[in-house]
Length: 274
Image (cartoon, rainbow, N blue to C red):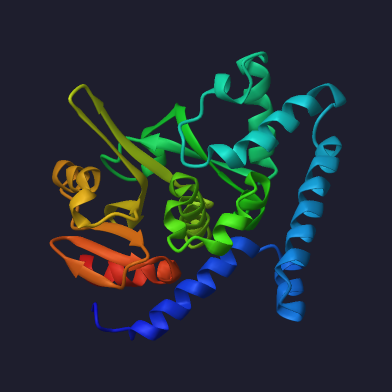
């Protein structure tokens, strides 16, 4: 499998992915890039779209709630990949007010909560802890714009490292939600073991048919997949999935998929779990 894509094509696809991480998938930004090839114009469109979302708060919230929506909306992109604590959003605002604002943004499709699941059986959503969650933002392009990461995305060779890997994690999360089973309504989850001396966390947990599989978004080498292997051993999973900049490979129960092939993950994992 590792030799299935020529190196030159692999590098070209990674470069196209880098551009997508900057532009994102919002139609107006994509159309601008395809017609003008001008990234600065795309960034201006993204900024205008973010302001439009702020202006639309009045459509689904009272005026008294706008300031809380604003706080969550502005903070959420910077907290992708992190456990959410309301005190990290604003120490001076009651958790209840921030929770209500977050729920409104989730209902509007602007943020997507990623809940902790025990992952001991299906459905994954039946075993969640609603008090422990992370967030994904609406779109990876809007996320990086809000965080001011476009400059680093343009020049840094390893975009997996940017913002502690949050951009890549956001991208994988929104893709997993987009390609998930329609009956799951785009729900995605993560898993953690919180035992003293044996801590572990995997970025996402998915199911392919009846198989529950752990997913990590990593820039490191195979030896740094301790949490992934811990999940495989504890849950008796057939394999684990690693998204990275590396080429496609499968070894010792780890399916390593290049980020640009995330859409192919159900097919690839399905072929190995039959």
